[in-house]
Amino acid sequence: MRRATSRTVVACLGSSSTAGRGQAFDWIGALAQRPQNARFAFRNFGVGGDLADNALRRLPKVVACRPAKVLVWVGANDVLALVFPKVRRVFRLAKHLPRDPSPEGFREALAALVQGLKAGTTADIALCSLAPIGEDPNPADTTQAALDRRIAEYSAIIAGIARREGCHYLPVYETMQAELLMRPGQAFTTFDFLPFYRDAFRALILGRSPDDIGRSNGWRLHSDGVHLNSVGGMIAAELVQAFLEGSA
Image: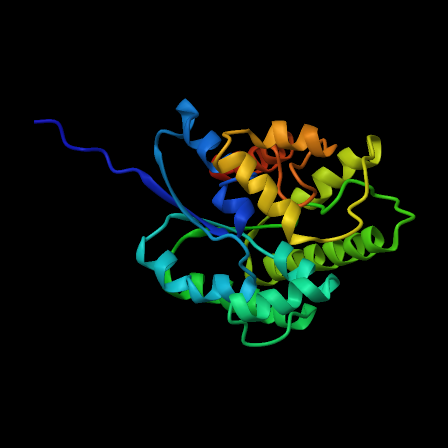
């Protein structure tokens, strides 16, 4: 009788970009479909709208799946809540935040998450820097400029924690920023919840892909300026693939 071959568990922890539902491209699903990744069992711990403090609360579930590799990609919602007061108010209530979002709070939560993973598992851990929000790397618009500054700041925090804790660092921000510098796109100038609900309806009810939605909205790497389409999502996926193969 042939013995069942156990697969290597890869836990992916983050927000909607990790969850890969609705208008967010499912890059984890794309990786899982590759023949060379048949040896991996992907566990998706992505939850839409989550901040670093929320991801920290899910640490016991990640530890319980006994992963050999853990990928952490969180922070975009922390940035949105910092830049847009209306987002901060909604997240404070809907996500039961223990404190107002801040760079210091993000650093503390992410460091605690990594330390908890190291204490509770023997997993190889990778931290991803943040994907740009909007596609204008040299903006005249003040909102896009504020987003660019915060994304760069939070990505630097992630890189610093990866260095201190001995984790892998996947340069999503740096790779996508280089792409946008070569081919800039439109700025992300305001945040309204209604367009995001509209795009979720397009994806979940009408069955439109993140790429279709992105074209309708005028984005190249995103579907809506925040969530990635397949072009942006596969940039992240290739960096994760290198981590899975031990070359990140």
